[in-house]
Length: 394
Image (cartoon, rainbow, N blue to C red; front, side, top):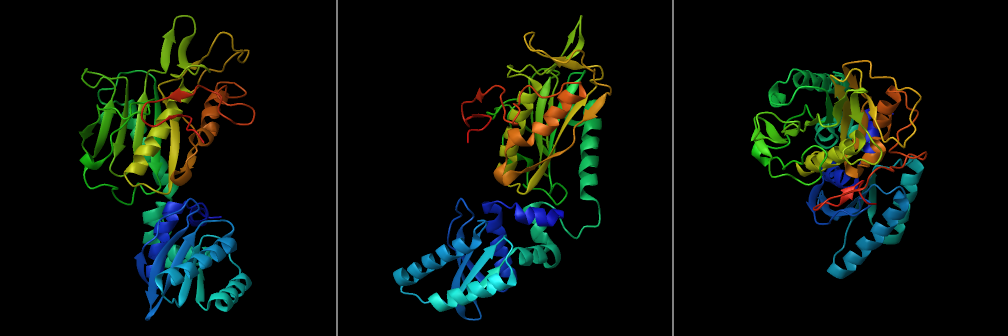
């Protein structure tokens, strides 16, 4: 399965609603959107083509035939309520539909309601967004299927450029205190396709690293916004940064400390809200909220990096049994494998389980103490004033 197929299959209701309207217009329909999005992607619009009027429905529901039948009943009720007569019913779905299924449903709708049914399904959407209108994929999924360059290599190159700037204390990291640093990057698929807002002032306010609540210290800096801990001081120990193109960067030095007995320690205590795992989970959750607020859709790539941290081991509670001997971090720059997070239905604790556990295992732990054997978060539950808690409640 290629990237476009995955994007179509995993599209959330809100994203699919926007794509459906543009797909219908691409097919020659006049579209007058009148409905609202539902939890399953259910959406309706009035359509017209060649003087024939009808209703368009779109849904990401797995049971597309059941949803289509329910929508047809709703359209019949609308005809009766409004005293209207429709000619067409168009159903847009991201599900797989066979030719025989299509013919059967067309005959069923014609016999029961007298309308001509047109189904635009997965194959049509992939064909249109992949060949005729790659701009739709770029706008809604964050990448252009016709690009020849290796998109993921570009994403990684951008991440490495940012890590170099942080290591050298340049750009927004110029006043960051020296020493070992933990870094989180959220990079949208569409980071190279243009800015999501016109002006830096239009970007949302930011939380501080490891916090969910938006902090009043956010300020406009060049092409983005910055929220630095202790910004009034000459130097600061953490910051969050968001650019107009969707790049989100969070940096923290608080999670490291030097011990005379044990050397460089990384705070990842199981019950500590200031642990690396907990801080990163909260920061990613807050970052996703900011990206959604500025209009980013599709998927973001998440990377966790440890800089200038060679020799670090995990600092954990004395009552916890760890490995017989930890293996100190063997490099000055360690970056986890990427985690892909779909913004429409982001599950932060689940998405971060593998990269966070990777850090524990790099230091010779068998598992991550913040997750149980089934992969469920068992670390601190952090309550906040304005938007609930981390992990987010179901």
